[in-house]
Image 1 (cartoon, helix red, strand yellow):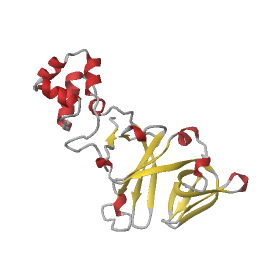
Image 2 (image 1 turned 120 degrees about the horizontal axis):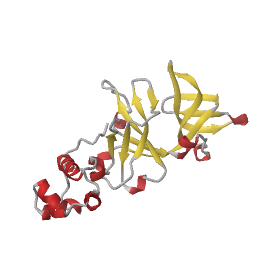
Image 3 (image 1 turned 90 degrees about the vertical axis):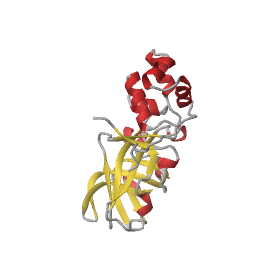
Image 4 (image 1 turned 180 degrees about the vertical axis):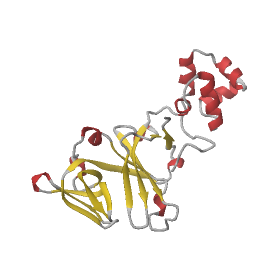
Amino acid sequence: MNKLTESMVGMDNNLTQCIEQSGMSNNEVAAAKGVTPETLRRHRNGKIQMTIKDAEHYARIIGVSVQKILFKSTPIPVVGINIIEEKHIARQLHDTPKYEVYADNQYLKDRACWVWKTTKKYSGIWYEWDGAISFIKHSPIVDKIVSEDCYQKICVVKTKKVLKDYGINQNIFAGVLYPQPGGLFTVDNGKTNTTVKDVELEWATPTLSTVFRPELLGVHVVEIAK
């Protein structure tokens, strides 16, 4: 998983606003950090990328979280994780988010996401999905509705009843959604050879995009502090 462990973080940071809100002067922060005011200025405007240790040090000086230093954007909740096994994709919905994603503004409006990982011994055709992040609309999950944007398009759904999928209890499925008479639905996924028919849905939300190399696009997964 693409956790925030990289030595350098290539996104616009929030250091300037954090310093202004702290009531400290730039010179005071620079002195406490042990750098020149010019180095601080270059950290603030992104001329020099901060390391994680830099951000942690600034956070302690100013009295805010590391995430608030590093990211201007509002975090996107990770609603679940897809674990790719040899013959099955286990889709786990998190009732309480365990991770959040920080990304550029293009990803922010009404967004949630799934993260992907493979089991350690996996060697199948989904290998490139390890560490990927799929973005979905958040509001259908929150409002518990079946979005019409899902009709005959790829989406993620939650069935009202738990079903058997490759012998495993499952109520989260992904695939193309087809409405049926009487408020029922079919979800068909040709990639996993999975089709569920005549099901009632709690919600359905469209899949918007998938990023296979998040770290190259300034997209970072951060574990939520307990």
